[in-house]
Image 1 (cartoon, rainbow, N blue to C red):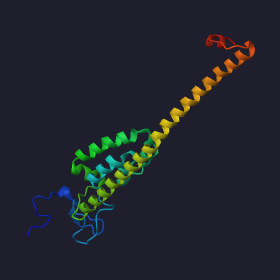
Image 2: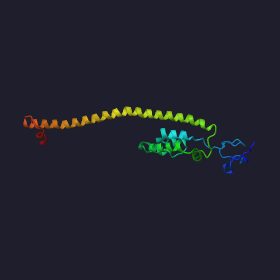
Image 3: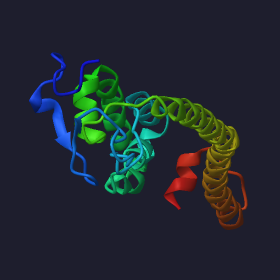
Image 4: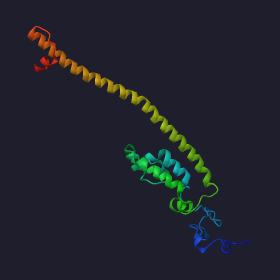
Length: 193
């Protein structure tokens, strides 16, 4: 059996020190084989789940909260502008095409997914997809109520405006009839009053 030190595929640059027992272990090992301490200080962050979060709930910063970045609050504060949603769409594309090694280096302390890490991402992705669909459904129902109400408001305001205009013309006719004791056939005569 070849030990880790004699293995031709393991370079010395890929070995790191265990935080607990200080023995040399491979950089991709999530658990130290000598003492059993888990190396990862936070949960594994899947790039697929982050991409789905960016696509479905990225406008409110869902992908940034998933990645553990506090500044996702800015997405939440300014979601109504639409700009965070546009940025999240570009981040969705970036997450999909990002190199897995670069992703792990940036978001997972350089440790790739272990055997237990990948399964939790699927559940989170399903929850995010259904959450996004629920959010879209709520927005659709609100639009279904708001659009007809707005159209009715426009019609009522136009009727009110025309009623006000007609009231002024009717007052002019009343003044003309009371002053001249006859009906005027011309609106210009009434406008002169």
